[in-house]
Amino acid sequence: MAEDRAVPLAGRTVAITGAGRGLGRALALLMAERGAVPILIGRDQVALEEVAAAIARNGAAAPRRFLADGAKPDEIEHACIAIRAAYPRLDILINNAAGWVPGRLEEVAPAAIAENVAATVAGTMLMTKFLLPALRASEGADIVTLVSISGTPAAPFLSRNPVYDAAKHAQHGFVESLRRELKPDRIRVIAVYPPDFQGTQPDDETWKTAEGERESGACMTTRDVAETILFALTRPRIASLAAVILDNNRPD
Image (cartoon, rainbow, N blue to C red; front, side):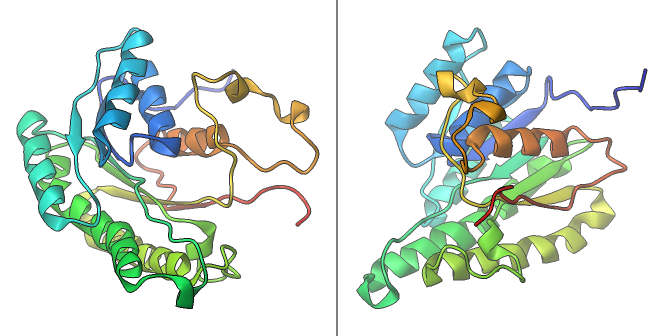
């Protein structure tokens, strides 16, 4: 029988941005289920409280919650100072929070463009910067950033949204440069590039829907993306899945 070389997540501290909903919420529940210590970061207090309650219902300790709007540097710094005080050692940072502005460029308000780019790009950079001291205290730290297939150099700008695409390309550039900067420090920098995926949650019945039971032509779900992230994080440290590009295995 082949040896299982997966590195356990139990006991590891995991800060998750955008933890109040969507993929961030799902990752928080999965981390707690695997014995990790999730740290919830988001801008919606009510949503964070709901996630903490859901984790407690599953038998784990309710995680700490920290408020921060990714578009507001002062809030990010304040939250990170509080996180470092509570958790001097941080093992994993998952940069999941990002903005979205619908509409054609000329239809979008200037302030909305600036806020979106700030939340997606500057928010990711500042969160990483302010939590690096705690990550350096870990014997094996990981930084995971959710970019998008629209942020890859060869992508045909699949979102058809210039504000979103530009911000995601900036995120891509940041993680590529950060990986080189932190490689001598043995901090893994992992970028995940998902396409469109359908929302579902670990505490929903739809979470366990088998691939064969999905509608013809259906795209991947939150579960597929979350499990890919967990796989990357549990690889032996000699192996780093630096860039994970996902694609829906269906005709476009």
